[in-house]
Image 1 (cartoon, rainbow, N blue to C red):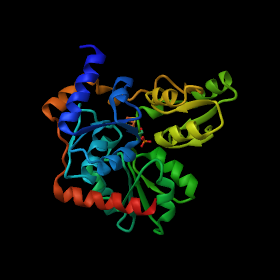
Image 2 (tube, helix red, strand yellow):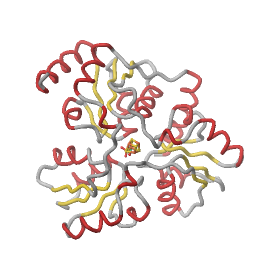
Image 3 (tube, rainbow, N blue to C red):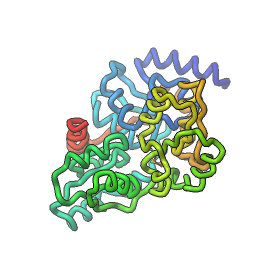
Length: 302
Ligand code: 13P
Ligand code: SF4
């Protein structure tokens, strides 16, 4: 089916179902085109909680749809591709976290939003790439466990000068951006500012002008007077950056930085998801309540 016919069908069905489509900033252009909102991981879940729609079509990876369902259990949250998961979130199970907690019984446990609902249920507090530094600053505890991203933990530890007990997780997409990629792009574009995601390697973070979440990147690109940016994150964001700022230039730090899971959703799959109202993402109530507490504690800080 042609993309134009598909998007017309999606729009008609969206109205019939009283649905909205949320898309993460890394989604394919064809998905971003039919989305009602684009945003970062937490931003989308908060939008889901606010909307009057009955059905949320979540175009992102599994932990993001789960977070939406944790915040709005009265709504139907569906994913067009249920197998789109985040490898970093999959690097830590609830059992592994339980074991780590027994090794450091006095530690406060901070978890990145890139975690499963079962892991979130065991956290003291959640954080995102936007607020991780502020969350750690707000904690008085001497011992802090930070899971699962060792590179975000390293960045936060340097920013706050706090010692952090880390988990050996990482994003397989962001580690593909190398310091030499940034140096090469800087040579080609000497006036460009460098924005990178804190999931990048510390050597890459050290070369950046801005270290920030995907939505902060979109905000900086819009509000800054600078006209050129080297972008150190998943390449899908370039589409949105260019669309929002047609007069500015955006150069991906590395074309290798592609998250295959984010690319599994297509317009066809969105249409099928709306037709069948599948696959639904729902979190068991006991886990949901505990996970929600960790998210709410974070929301009180930011
Ligand atoms: P953001 O919350 O910054 O969008 O990041 C999510 C993510 O998965 C980055 O790889
Ligand atoms: Fe997970 Fe990395 Fe993909 Fe983000 S880019 S969803 S952290 S694998």
